[in-house]
Amino acid sequence: MVQGGITTLFEAFLKKETLFSDKKALQSSYTPETIPHRDNQIKQMADILATSLRLEKPSNLFIYGKTGTGKTLVAKYTTNKILEISKQKNIPIDVFYLNCKLKKIADTEYRLIAQLARELGRPIPPTGLPTDEVYRLFIDVLDKEKKIVILVLDEIDQLVKKTGDEILYNFTRINEDLKNTQISIIGISNDLVFTDNLDPRVKSSLSEEEVVFPPYNALQIQDILKQRSKIAFKEGMLEEGVIEKCSAYAAREHGDARRALELLRVAGEIAERKGASKVKMKHIDEAEEKIEKDRILDIVITQPKQFQSTLYAILNICLKKNGTIFTGEVYEVYKGVCSRIGLHPLTQRRVSDIIAELDMHGIINAKVISKGRYGRTREISLSIPNSNLPKIKNALEEGLDLS
Ligand SMILES: Nc1ncnc2c1ncn2[C@@H]1O[C@H](COP(=O)(O)OP(=O)(O)O)[C@@H](O)[C@H]1O
Ligand SMILES: [Mg+2]
Image (cartoon, rainbow, N blue to C red; front, side, top):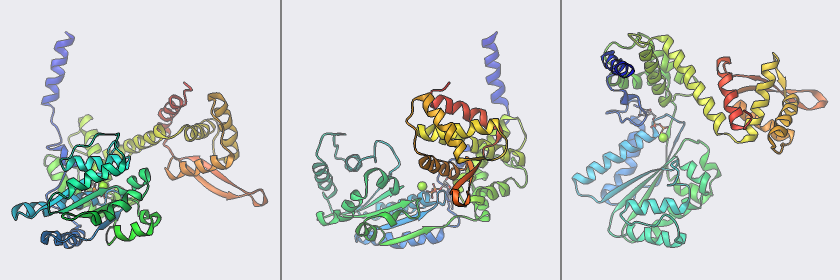
């Protein structure tokens, strides 16, 4: 009986109309055929990289812009095009793409070089050799024949955060050790001030050329969404205004195409699960709420215990008391939490920094107010929707072993 029921459930599922025709088109890894509103950046990159077709080393290039502005997409697109031509015309050009956010590949200089050597066909054990030796092996295999190598280091700010900037210094000098090959680096960063903290020598050689990716405006995001939704949804599955609303939401903070695509995808999934005949405006609001909930939960789960304890203190005060609360109150409750879980309490100053960080993540609202000669304090209120509180409280209690 139960088993027959499951078969019926699956059959009913299969018969159910789906709104999507190819959901992959809304994923951020999908490569669209054309890239609207980035002609300028593509052209700049192409001009810089074109010299490699004459076997001259292109200038190093630094690409920056906020998340979701098409940097990864355009970098892959342009380097793929140059590879295509080079294959057709038998010009020895190699492109290596590495996302430095990847764990186990780019957390140490050793691992990164070993990975590149591996891609060039020279296996290197995952640990054990001195770094100098790893470099030597890498240079050997890199320099085997005359060619141009373009190395794309995506999210390069993450690499420097993990390993320091010496690795970039070494990379920008590598050509001095090469006789045949010439290597050119494309660094990509979401962090707009990343180069400010680099060693000036690294900074100037990494950004011989720069290409900026400005945020999209709402109209540009509409074009991107239209292009992708044509592939992703069956015809007529979007209520009028849905694209415009998604775009407006995504453009509200900064024009982030990734966020817009995610919003549309989640709205589609919600509509489908609810058995709606179309994606409607209200599904976008629901999608926005879901994404925001997931985002905050994600932050809460991954933060260190001090951060969690501070938030837990704020949450508890807010659940008991209406209106705004102050840093001093939070600090008292926070100390209580610490003693319950055996955590060494930080100074009020440090907790105040954590409060500022919580504000930055959009979890609370903390306004600094002056109390004259008594110094300054923060007026704090929660900015998480009430419906989200129980889940977050649970997550914190689990994280802090309070449950
Ligand atoms: N101009 C564009 N046209 C079509 N899709 C775009 C465009 N810009 C960004 N996207 C899409 O938005 C998402 C985020 O782009 P991505 O290149 O990963 O951004 P970044 O690397 O700047 O964070 C990807 O799914 C990408 O395909
Ligand atoms: Mg990217």
